[in-house]
Length: 118
Ligand code: FES
Image (tube, rainbow, N blue to C red; front, side, top):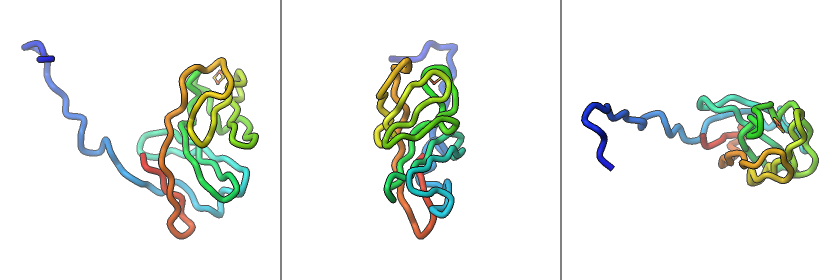
């Protein structure tokens, strides 16, 4: 759709895709633990499930509480405010009141560094 004549186009490229960035050391995240980190201007929840690492958004899609202040039960990160639960492997909603899933991010480990594709 063409822009109206008085509308300026804004380029959103460049740093919009940062790729993999270091977010934590594996030494800081034991099995069955989760941690809130900031990377690429995003708030992320990084989780260690039996030695595999996952990352989803850390800000609850219900009313923006931090999931890292809640509880991790198996694959479920539970929000401390109203009890919504998200699957840490997919970001999917396991329990409301949240209806919208969390964003999901690719994770890789290099040496003892956890990297997330933001
Ligand atoms: S803010 Fe997370 S359940 Fe309401």
